Length: 305
Ligand code: Q46
Ligand code: ZN
Ligand code: ZN
Image (cartoon, rainbow, N blue to C red):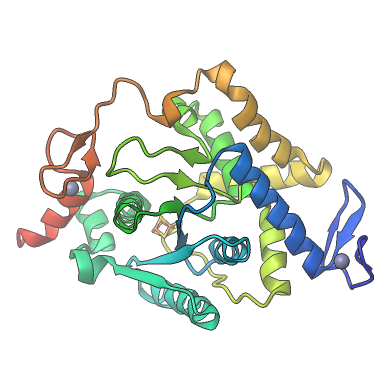
């Protein structure tokens, strides 16, 4: 099949518009979607610097390449979570990507730099590994972005966003629905702005982009991934998308543009009445009265328990 815009071989076909795109026109199309998300949600001003959180996966690596090509000043952040072979391999892909393009990649090692063993902490606290891992990742991403004076960009794509939103709607997780936003402002010097420039880009588009532009990325999922409920939601959404192409885009875009009035989402996603205070140990913000969740995890390993 030929590209609908030139005579090159097509790499992707869009049934809803009956259009096929070659690798270069797919890139142009994805860049337009990223630009639209950045403008619509006021994610970045010209000249603002970005820290792209990369996991070695297709979405984050593609996002990094697109932002570089769009002219943004970027650095990458890779967090070595200490999850065995999975972490080793995802680091190799992230490093390989940065080295090939001569880009700066910051690496933070959770065990070596902060003394936290995520898997051991989860066992000790009888918490799901992903919950401890999420606390650690959020803290490190924010801290690194604040220290670097950069806006934090993550590679959440449209499918991720749609399944998280629908998952939260199915369980009426009000707090998450109120906070959900592709662009969270920095409301304090210790809180970095967080943006998701890929919310209009589908998983199929990012996989095709990486494949057709020579980006090598990690395919196996994290062994601790326990998104059973979310994968059911994702599967259901993918069936809806197959039957009615464009539904996911409508859902995600509609949620962010129309739910403001319906759900009274406001205050940049920060729940009113929750007072954030500096952690007495690290100075980063926490809603708890003592040390923040990250410092409490650290103390599990420093007290010799
Ligand atoms: S890395 Fe960490 Fe994920 Fe692995 S342990 Fe869970 S949260 S699944 S995106
Ligand atoms: Zn073309
Ligand atoms: Zn702290």
